[in-house]
Figure 1 (cartoon, rainbow, N blue to C red):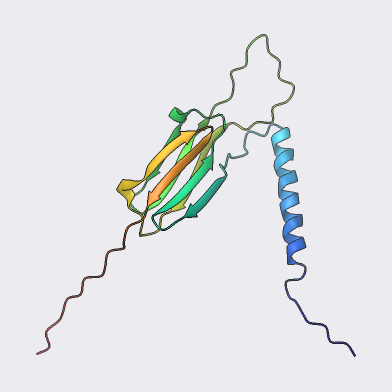
Figure 2: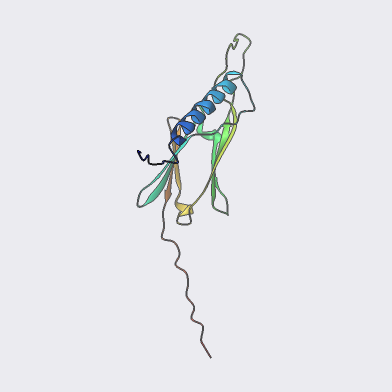
Length: 148
């Protein structure tokens, strides 16, 4: 009798790959139908080093003036804006519209060690680059309670 080692995740990789393919196909289908209810979600890369966190968001075709970056009091960084549709002109007929237009929002909860007043943003070649400097978290204040 041969013993076979049981791997509970054996089929998981193929399931994830099939789900990603299905979602991509659905995404392409909605875009080609010109469905205006599809929400724009900028794709991002998030990384860090010893001094900073970095967020790079793809925002192709969006003017810098249409992009807003805000930080709420509860520590949520939000990138938002609008990609406006090209105005239709009388001498131009559209046969297919695959690019997406409309409002977009992407939010991230910031770690406690981000120095909020030091965050910087740069926009070039359709990519928004955010640098979020780290700071040492505040040490808890110890107060000695006298024992009577």
